[in-house]
Length: 80
Image 1 (cartoon, helix red, strand yellow):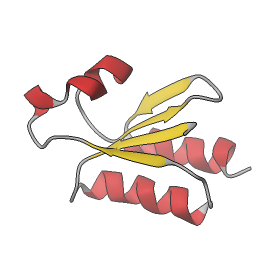
Image 2 (cartoon, one colour):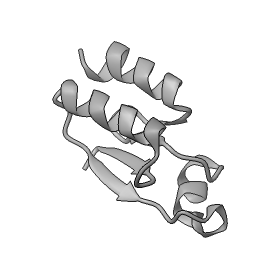
Image 3 (cartoon, helix red, strand yellow):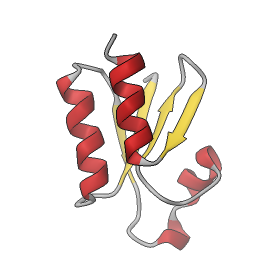
């Protein structure tokens, strides 16, 4: 899968990104993370931090955090 969303179940910011990806009809995979920050090693490995959401666009070589940035990226880049 070329687009991966790291998300936490019940996180409103993650849900907003998920909704935007679905609305834009973008194929993506969701990797659900552990609720404990200290157990989010995979997120830290790919993004350098443990907060979610994190979006990885392998096709364009982009990894980003912060839901507002991700939503803007979806709208301006992926939804085109």
